[in-house]
Amino acid sequence: MTEKKAKIAVLVSGGGTNLQALIDAQNRGELGNGEITCVISSKSDAYALERAKNNGIKTRILIRKDFTDIASYSRAMRDILIEEKVDLIVYAGFMTILDENVCDAFQNKMINVHPALIPSFCGKGFYGLHVHEEALKKGVKVSGATVHFVTAECDAGPIILQKAVDVLENDTPETLQKRIMEQAEWKILPKAVQLFCDGKITVENGRTVIDE
Image 1 (tube, one colour):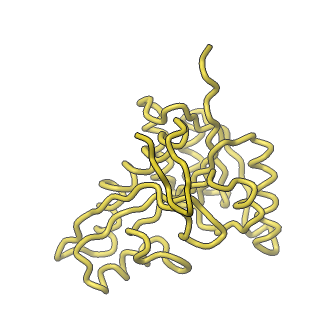
Image 2 (image 1 turned 90 degrees about the horizontal axis):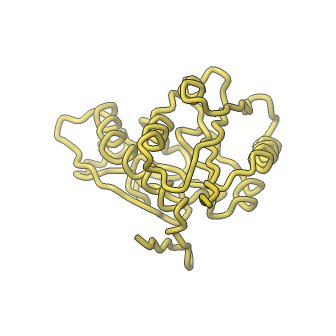
């Protein structure tokens, strides 16, 4: 008997480059015992939805602006995720911080990739190019990406994987962003998903233990 695959929901808000990295990994058989079964977008015009449709993956839209506050949006998202019977939720450029309604229902079952080496350049306000602008302003020689579990506190969950990327002398926020995506995010996000779906990650005292 083949083992039942873990159902993965990917949350998106924009172009979906990280989603594409996950789809490519899945097509290469690199998500272990996991399968992307649903892509949920906070915007109806997110290009990520096209990427999902092009690969035969179910899509759903839950528009943030349709809800008066984050609590009602989080409850609606939680209900969809329960309805979809998901085992793992992946933030892939998802621009809304969901509250404890979701985080408590899916504790240590939600992961995010952040474009810096946490605890540097993370937390509220640190997203997209802002992260790289601040890294360059500080003159760091190394940046990178972090995959971590999601909690109600922004970027504060247990770290799963990190990968460092050199910062070059003539970098702009845009060139640094691109290099970190290509050299770090697109590699460690699928790897973290595979480790989770293969049951290789445990959380002990707020830290992850990986059984490779």
